[in-house]
Image (cartoon, rainbow, N blue to C red; front, side, top):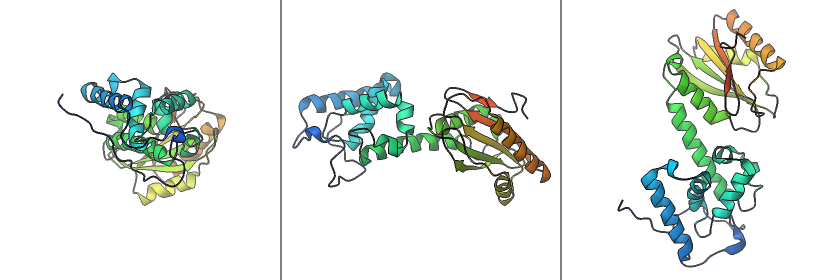
Length: 254
């Protein structure tokens, strides 16, 4: 393709007086050719072949270029992957965890969380205001994108109207690595506020194993009883693991 790329790209976050993201070898003036040529080659490969043409560390380098416009970002990309495991886990890591990595300052965190937010918004658009039961695979993709790689438990409720169209996706609570507080009264109260007719519970297990605990089973039955008292339908409770999910309905728990 005839498209070319010229350095530098401006970062989204202005530099502050603090040490920049990877301070040891701050460069002034023009980028050394070995860095600028490498960046141009990566961009051209991405334009020609998309994300599939690049391994995780090179895709991560592309993200880091904007945050660190004047340094070699390959060492940081490698360090992030060595620490968190893969590209998905890097962009979904908490800002606090990211900033514990040497060289990952505020500008790096903004770029990584921007990628995460864009991915989540795209997946959410595939299910919001759509009949959820006929878009089940898209719903599972969305849940995995938003929750599978979190380091702590998160509890969400998906509210549906009479036609099972998803009208709201609420993050109800965040918890610890193995517990998240859930309040059935608040869930049904929110359903009434939205004029919802049905709902789906979703939470993640940071351990990666979606097998429900006794607490998960007890909480689900409490929510189901609260729903039944008000004429609401609890369609399912999904537990999201690292690579698979468990459906309470499909597993016979509901």
